[in-house]
Length: 59
Image (cartoon, rainbow, N blue to C red; front, side, top):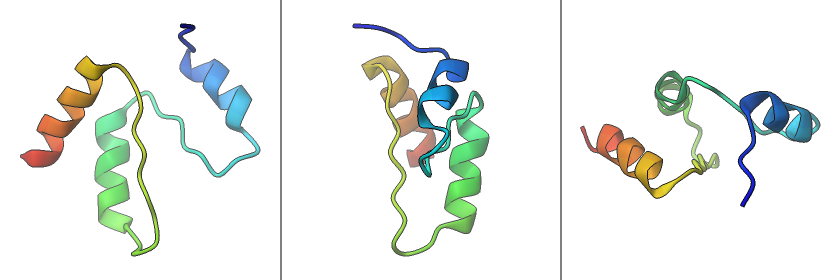
């Protein structure tokens, strides 16, 4: 499985309405602050990373 840097992801998704961020906590915080009812936040990564994000969201 290939791992992509944030720069590579930005290049791949620049035409899409996709946010690529190195600072996931500030991105999640900003999303939750501005959340619209029809918006969806999808966070991907390793199981370790997802467990870290989950812990953050449950706080």
